[in-house]
Length: 371
Ligand SMILES: [Zn+2]
Image (tube, protein in one colour):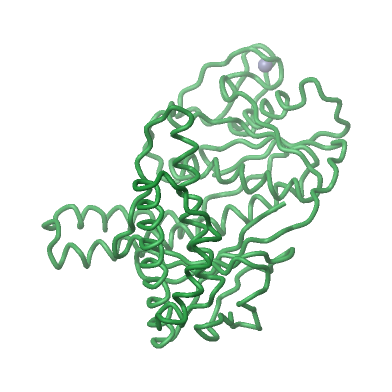
């Protein structure tokens, strides 16, 4: 099993220069290799192999100072990227598609480089990430890495912030346990998430505030003249808020997915159709709807690590149906309480939905204790 960890880097001025130079050298190598492959193909219908390019590269490294300054494996990874771009291109041609030719990367369009081999060329020591050819960079490791690190990718985002992304081998997936407990998960109106146990998780207040701040910054951006100095400044501001929100939201989703996995052996989510969703003005709800896919994704891989299962069920009628007797009890978004005229069941609408989701997930399964 593979998973990835992304951590923010805090390079010094000198290191930022080296990181930037490395990206630039990689970009140029990418374009050179692309040109060489293109030429070989157009002139001779010859597909230049990775090994031929790598052989040429090691000769060039002796002559070219910029190439010589970058760690060899990092450069080889650039060639592999070119190779892959062509493989994808040819595969799509074979399938009868009309793909665009692999593209040259302009300045600013080459954003990352990779140390491709496990533990070779990079090392984490305390709060430092030591990169061959660059130095010891301060790293903010907000989570412990579980598993064996395979590759390390260094990336610059649109605001100029640097990140290290570690691809990790978490070992063999453990065998699935026969579920004995189950829980239904509903994306709620009042709370971000409601479980069939009655527990709820609310979308953090500070995140809602940040989203409001983002909306205001975007409005300000739209009033500026595109391409002007102020526009560029504002655009950077928007990107910064975006990044902060993304990170905080991810952190929140990691926290609740962990809590959900701890709850039961079988976790049932409703499979929301985001496109078909009614636009609504409850900001927190809106955000949660759009984080739903990621929450399912995080829960699924956390569950797989411990042999637990995630199931998706059809989301139609989960809020309308009575979880007690099964009849449809129509509700609008305003109705916060489910009240059944037939069986008399009365409970929070989100809890009612979570119970329906649980029931759908248990269909055809024999689970013992359900919550
Ligand atoms: Zn009922």
